Image 1 (cartoon, rainbow, N blue to C red):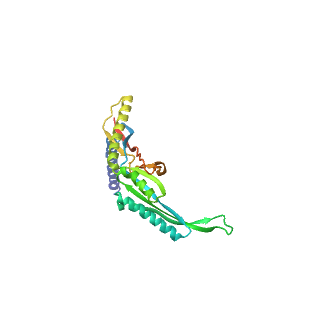
Image 2: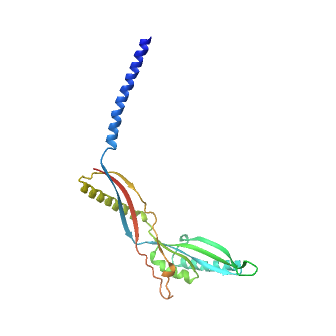
Image 3: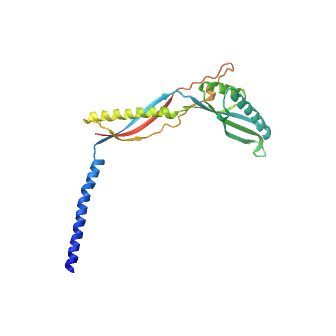
Length: 243
């Protein structure tokens, strides 16, 4: 019985050792074929310069009066005139969105009886999306003429950012390849195919800001000048090359 048990133990030990000996070479071979190669990792950048084709104008009306209701009514009257004038030049109703509205008390902090409310101010602002960039100056002129006296500026942007961003991506990949080849030449090796490409940044919505007060025409007979300038659409990639 002891001999049989001893023989079984030796047999199981032999099987275990054989299994280990078969496993180790296979693991080493797998590592060699998937990750053991010389590589160079670089980052590439691409930039496309584009003229904006859409604008977002933030403007509004500020009124104040001793009576809160009167301040509110005066504000509504002026804002309705602004909105009506913008519709008349082709601004769609869906492209005008209220983004801020409040009624706030005005205090007299110098009164002997302490802080005393002496009136109310009402502020109502909207964001106007101008899809025809040539209309920006006209929008500003009309809004101010009809009573708009509050603004947080203009944002210029690109309606179809994706198209230009993809072009910037192509530039970034070419830029990365050029860097890798320069490094390869310096160390005396030949760069082969890329084995990994990672997009580091996404362009998203890019904006350029402008100050309405600086842009507004001082002479009512002259239209407000609009200079959109150019915008940079940037892309960055990280590429690993085998050599």
